Length: 196
Image 1: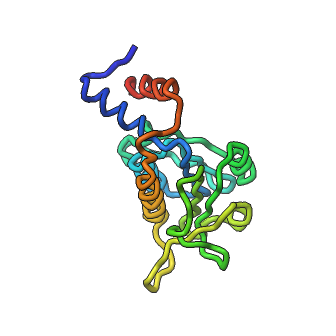
Image 2: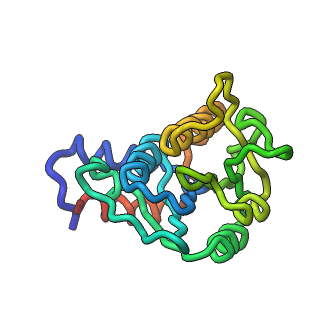
């Protein structure tokens, strides 16, 4: 039984769920600051990303405060992995192209990447970025063009920049008009969200 206060709330939930991009996902590798994780979850919700994977085999899984995430965690599904291999294998089995954010000689600009295909975007630790293995096993490495002296952004800012480029590309292809997910699945999520 749906527990919602108003018809307008139900309509908002329906519109948000219907625009979710179930073939665009984010992977965070060893991001240790829970405030950064929370900020990234907020951006994911804002651009319609439903699923986020967290990989930790060095650091502990961070405790994400509901206050600091502005409750974004309840609107985004979070999955845990203890290795790059397990996470990447899952994405490859599901047909995703994996984009790891790092600046190397093979990296392409985020403006050259095609985020309208089934995409998993990997962001790394605040101090060291993605690990070598995460970059090597990715299908493509990408970078954010920078014109200043500093060659990196805070990970939560970097996530926002990349995800809003993905949103721009997907908007141009009208991908927010149809999530490509079966109506039955959309109705299941709406039922779940109405109880939150």
